[in-house]
Length: 300
Image (cartoon, rainbow, N blue to C red; front, side):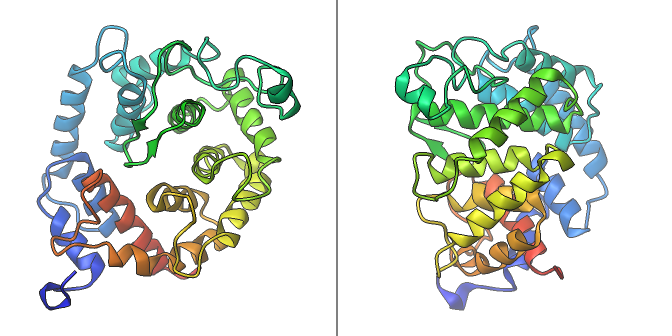
């Protein structure tokens, strides 16, 4: 980045980028900055109506797991309540897929059973597709690409779990089972270079962070694990910066706050003249970056 072309602070450049953006990310960014536009409430209604109209009768977006799950997140972000018809539809589609063939952890052999990553130890995961259908490589809305089939199914289920928790469904037995399964897996996550990839640990951390007080001890352990494996340059080896920042933000913990602060230099290094943070998932990553920068400026 040519320093002579840079005007303003990183946050100011992001504020300028989002100042007139008529998207969900624009509405959320302006709200985070405390400068909502006069028409943002009406824009949120308009965007939510358009998104709702795209749903099929079964509640899905094109019968695909990631777009459908993300649609629930988008609608909630735009102020639709959990009892909004479109939110109910999308979550209904998701819940119907809990525990179906193709969910992470299904199937068992001697090795998987010993590692407690089979159906005898895990439950509550959502099936994003039939077991015979290959999903990977797949890109999530935050730009993270999962190239391993098990990791893709795991991460998609965690994304779905987050939507269900945001909608207040944490009391459902299947959701509790999913959370408890994640907590059980997390007991094995002792290393950043173990059998579970760091990006899977990050996905699990993000979901557990929304699970409530009974999962807080596990969230603290995982946030500490991430903080302990942050490199001197502020990045995380073998983990995507943006999902990691999202998960740490969701935890809200002091160790996470310190880690986000250490990640500011490499985050700012990515910033372009227009304020964005790269070409991948451009608006979503700009929003994640903005939230991280704003949190880093607060007192722990």
